[in-house]
Image (cartoon, rainbow, N blue to C red; front, top):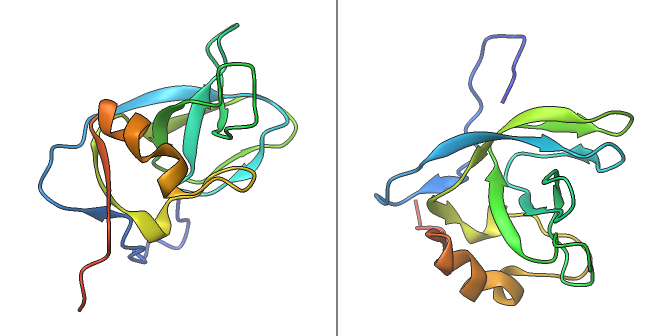
Length: 121
């Protein structure tokens, strides 16, 4: 996540020992300002990404990746880092509509993305 002040603020998104594989993706213009931890779906036509939402019918109703950094695609497409695999604090994942971790748990598991409850401090 870009941070011009040069300080690190932990967000506890990452967890567990399962390997994280990263990549990049294009967030589609109009997707808005997305935060790290947003679960993204891939639009079938063109392959761009937007927040996963089970009510969508353009391919983005199915999880594809987890956003690794804040990204603002309010007015134009934007390239962003994504996690393609890994373990994540389920309370830090963001979904579209009324979707929850339970809505997408099975599909996320098929991607080797594992939402986990946060461990107590």
